[in-house]
Image (cartoon, rainbow, N blue to C red; front, side):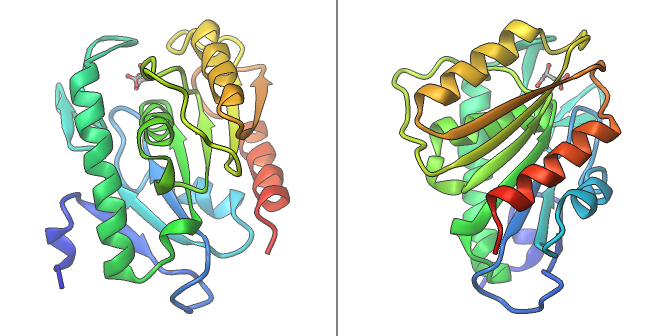
Length: 215
Ligand code: MLT
């Protein structure tokens, strides 16, 4: 059995309030550039009304000291080789963590913001079995897959800022269209906002989560 610090990522794990290992939902929280494993916990607490477990890793790539989940060459231009390597590494971490903490790997839903949402989208494309669904705040197409994976049965909620200067609306729309082609149940909400999250992002994600994953 591995120790917590052998799982490969600095992280937080908070068990489900139900204290029952096994079949209950786990939220995989993936922060934005410059964030850490603590950032999204307050948001997860608001959007999840079912008391899910929380697994929240810190991105291992540093850009001028700021943690991220994969390297980029410039804003919006990703190092695809590193992105793919980091996506597999994150999926392996998730699998090992599910054994270590005894949560159901088939009931994991990613909640990602910006860079974290982009690696969550990459996880869906490269390791679809890793996630049951995802909340993608401010996401774009992370890379063009060679073939469209089958994501039928997965529930995905995207929320984007109409005036986001970092994530171009084209990139968001392209991701939405790609996810639609996978057969997933995907919805996209536009917020009258920029890159920052707003109350309406959070409340719409909360409604979506309870409607999509009702016990
Ligand atoms: C990315 O690098 O994933 C996106 O540009 C968003 C961000 O700034 O983190």
